[in-house]
Image 1: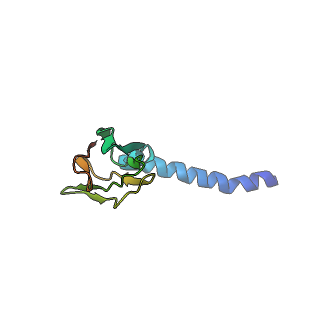
Image 2: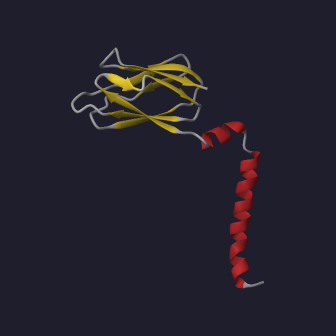
Image 3: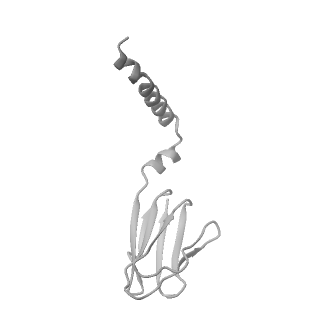
Length: 120
């Protein structure tokens, strides 16, 4: 067997095992592979947008676009909670949506700031 083919054997074996694993993966694993990231702006004491429709496994990036205001995003729900802590201007926080349902992200500093997320 030529030397070139001997070097390819381990690579082909790994590729075959990866494909076999993907074929056997449950639907939830496929959903995680196709997850998306949505950017939500915190600006002028508002979330932009104010409503999001997402899937489990998707990620929200909360970006504080205000030049001088600190925000404090949080979720309090029966099955799911999240607390970003204080977010200084220009910073980002990421939230992975692991639970299905409807949730409201609020700001602990600006109580009128609300973002409703619908997770399938």
